[in-house]
Structure formats: structure tokens, C-alpha cells
Image (cartoon, rainbow, N blue to C red):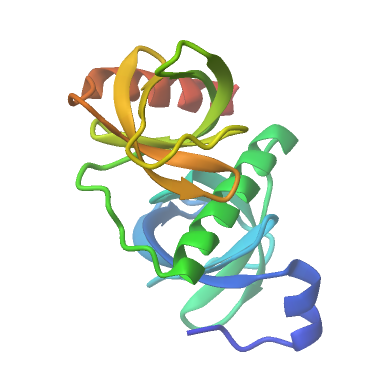
Length: 204
């Protein structure tokens, strides 16, 4: 449920209720399981067993959002809120992913991914239609079973396409993009390699 805070603060941050599991580390290195309960493009509210001090640095690993970090700006007995401290390019990616997750929630779309997906917001790829035309696309996320991507075209549901080198079929339309199901299971190692590269880039 939404956390109790002034409406003016809620409006300023455009926070929305979105529940995501994860884990977090406080400044002393102690790690705890958590649940993200509210998000915005500049911060998140975290419910967990241990609450840090105001101004304390927190690193969290959140399902669907990946690694985030920030400083505690509000706290209560069992939750705290952090303002994100990440590069602006990463902040934009997080904002796009939050928009995507909120639209899924608002549309009542079921979670259709049987395999764990890797956050790949803004990873560039190519979508090729059955007639050979190619379009630049940005991955929202992907698994060994399928992917969601931002792209300027919307082939009909069921149309054959190729994402990168992976044959697929369009499974549904999204706002600003499409979701596809791969014709054959993609290599899990390929997605793990992308995630390792992204993690190294964030540390840099």
C-alpha cells in the first residue's frame, strides 16, 4: 500500500505504487531482503528489516530495475526512501523502465515471462521484418524466450521478425514498441554477457 507522506511531496516526485522484490546493502555492508513499494524517476521507497540513517548511502539490487544506489532522505520504522545517485544516462534508463512497468500494471497485463529477464533498457539492436526491411530498436528487457523493445514500427501480431540474429514472432503491441517470442530459445549466456558488461559500465 502507499506510504503515508504529504500529498505535495508525492506530487513533486510523481511517485507511483509499484511492488518489486530485491535486496539492499547499507553503508556498513550488511545485506537485507527488501520490497520496493513506491518508485519515481528520481527515487524509490524501500520496505525492509533494517532502516539506515538519513544521508546514508544505500545500494540495492531490484528485480526488473537492476542495481541502483542513492542516499536516504526519509525514514520510518520499517521503510525508507532514497534519492537516486546514478549517472544521468542510467537515470533515464531507470525512468523508461519504470514507465514500462507502470503501464504493464495499469493495463493489467499478466507476467508472461517464464524465464528470468535481464534489464537491458536502451541496449540497441536491429529489428528486421519478413520483407527484409531493418529498423533500429532499443531493448526494454529480454529473456531466453522473448523480448520487449522500443521501435518505430508495429508489425501485426503473429508477424515473423528477426531481433538481432534471433528469429521471432510478434506477440503483442506495446506503447512505443512491441513484444516478441523467439522461435527458438536464445542462449542464456548471451544475455548474461550483456548483463556483465552493463554492470561493469555502471561501476565505471
